[in-house]
Length: 210
Ligand code: IMP
Ligand code: MG
Image (cartoon, rainbow, N blue to C red; front, side):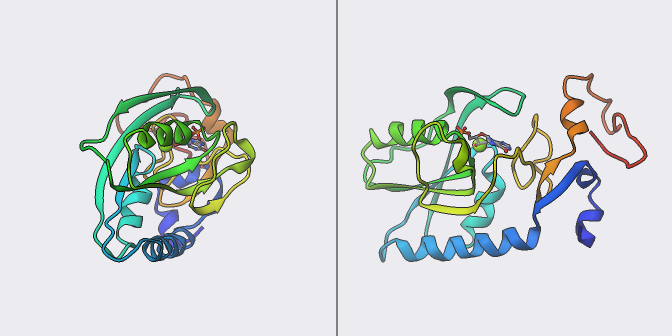
């Protein structure tokens, strides 16, 4: 772990770091350059962030694309508080504006079963955009239930549940600057009574905050 990370109490809950801040930063820069190069002169893609997980990735990716872009957000839900999808996608927040004739770039934190993205792609295609492409920071191709190939992938990962850089477990850990795997004890402590504000629960001798 690097210096910055050891200052992060939440990092003590990680069993291991999969992707460091530097690794993520370099890859997001490359993705931005590739995305920029793949649109024609004068084309202004509409970046659609899938809330909430994609917000950290989107805010970095946005600044790595050196052309005019527009921004909108969509929110879906398919997960309860656990680590497995319920298999059902619900639209919680739609786009603010019509997208007919626009070049849509869907921006996602991670593609797992592919259900969320397949649902969104189908829904948005019906609105007759000029194009739809998908950029995802992480991809777990081994878990696909729906065939779906993203256009831009940051990192392919194994079938692991990961947190950090926008990705959550039960709404926590989105603010970790790295991506990693939680200690098993931190998954198991789910369902316990929430600690009082600012008070860590079950702090053991390694100082976990979970
Ligand atoms: P899909 O519909 O199964 O592809 O699920 C995609 C969504 O599930 C992502 O946008 C994430 O919000 C969530 N998800 C899938 N895998 C993980 C993970 O490893 N950590 C955190 N969230 C995940
Ligand atoms: Mg998500």
